[in-house]
Image 1: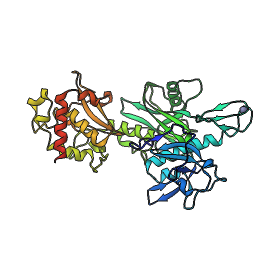
Image 2 (image 1 turned 90 degrees about the vertical axis):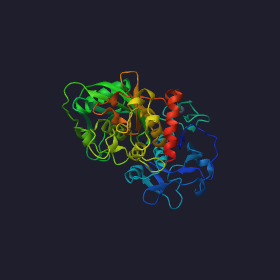
Image 3 (image 1 turned 135 degrees about the vertical axis):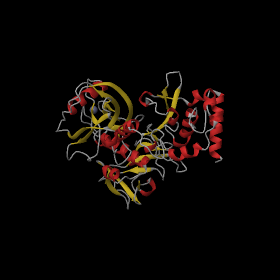
Image 4 (image 1 turned 45 degrees about the vertical axis):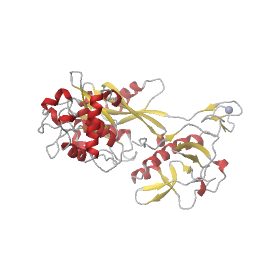
Length: 422
Ligand SMILES: [Zn+2]
């Protein structure tokens, strides 16, 4: 998602007294357009303070990216971007798949703040010119002390599931509204309703469906719309016949795992949710690999390895010594993944990041696997043969808790060292 920029960090604490440094970034914003310089086929860069002519005092502190502050230039018309930079609509940057991702995040967030500053120059109560609050990110009226904070529009993204038919609802906006890409139900929270009520109302209004089992997933700032988005899963309750609101949606269909291509980029919460559902619900196909999730296990580690490559390497390393003691007697080369799940999942987490989840096995133990964004894979699923695991019931696993057992930590270190020396 757009905010997943670790180890980079966008820090939005307010430092109104900061002084612009020569290599800080400057955002020239006009509506939804931002001044950028295109670099190569896929990248862009932002102007630095040292390249800009206006006096430092005219720059407004926004936030920082790592050690560099990001500043808002005075409104376009008053301030002109330096030579070589042009105003480009943020949507064009997204459609061109321009990175780096942390700069897309900077642009989206800057557009949000620039819009708020532009629309709060005068007091809504008495009409006086507003001033920057000295200590907080706020605008204050010197006449009546009305204080205005940045505005966020809470909104929901809803993935409506039909567990019985193994489908979810994909939508597209009506023609002319936004890009023609697959999306989920979305809408703004109204004053006086809970977020859960908003989920129910938006699904009812857009699809004519009732829903139950509403579960929170994750949130996402989406600055270009001034939004803070919350993602929810829910299940259709009763008749699954869609009655689409044609004024809002151009398309609304039930789609199975093989009918979800995902969006062209991985910036949005919507895309992460639909691809995660797809990857959790697709049926493995026969082929070279048969571990769960192998088809989409295409994230890369620092060495350019995919989880499939890691699986290939581990096939030569898993052994009785790395198998959990309670299953060690049953381990064989014919069943190499037996008893290897947690140490393998944490090793894969070292390489690919993400989280380790565990499926409860009913005997107090968990079977561990990996979730990296929307990429879900289980390198040691084959030990279960034809037994279907309920990945949907998995719970987050704690590395610290697992490795409190010295014996397990030592097996993990053994496998890690064997992999390193391979
Ligand atoms: Zn006022």
